[in-house]
Image (cartoon, rainbow, N blue to C red; front, top):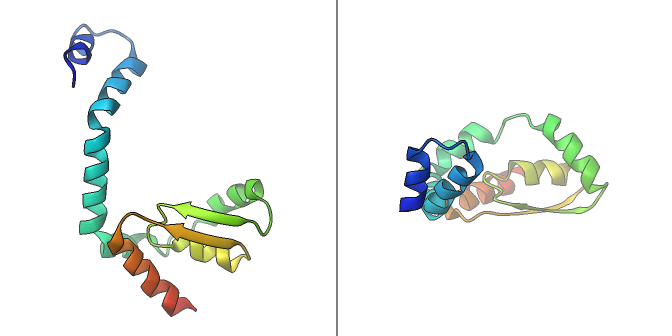
Length: 114
């Protein structure tokens, strides 16, 4: 954290947005690295915990905004759960994820479900 951000926090200013900006600028790269590391180390566990979760209540408003039968790109698709559901509903859905470990889990699942 920069000296200015530290001083701002120490004086107790009620400038939450500025403080949050200081925090995010300091931790953006660290946060991305930590997130990447988590998914690489816990891919199978994450897949097992999240793939079967019911998400229909979130799909309805999203798909209403997208429009019927449209293309969907799920960036950060994780386990591929949503892509699979969207395809089953007739959407032309694709997913990408920066975690090679999750993509392997997703490909295994897609192969089993076809």
